[in-house]
Image (cartoon, rainbow, N blue to C red; front, side):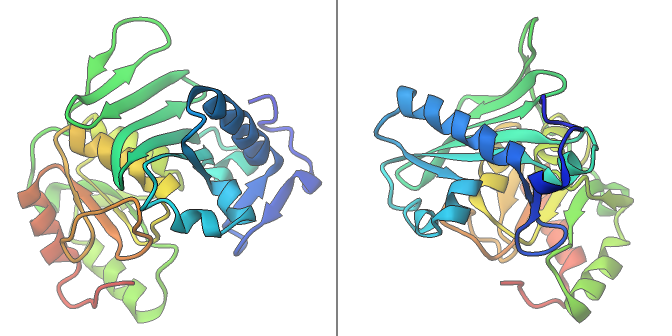
Length: 257
């Protein structure tokens, strides 16, 4: 937080392209989190976004790890680097290839949205009582509001998807999955769609949504697992809504790898 709005040109770098950034704050935050996790869970595999950038082989170890902690130190780096106060910290716990806990922190509000498999999803404020989260009831596709990340789709496939998304009431992208998942889990919207799957971006949010009563699956209907990095992800308020959305936005589009 002390770095927000104070980054110099040398503190921001491109990764894969101009919209994929890393800052000195991402790296410093991840070092701090890794150090604290090592003290709490010294035997856990630590899989951080910036750690994987430095050692890509780490990502391949996640599915087989007995215990792993997956971290996105600054989700929404593009916003952070451009002075937009919409970013978060995401941490998930993976045990035996399954996501069993997730935390999404809003550094501005100072509150967390947390989920534990089988125990529900909760908003935990800095002070005050925690509140159980619920995605709410399903509604017709034409009335749905949701988040759709289309930046990693290209050409005719992207054009077709955008045309089909026009059939929902409205869609947007915060460029921050942390806040999109938080909004979905408390019933503020009805779906979220992502093509690019990196575990630090989606494990905590998918579990949060599911424990709040929602339904999540890859575009082909298969379960989303920590080891998956392709196949897309669609999250909705319930299974029927998921299927209705899937049929509406992907009727003639091949599954995106």
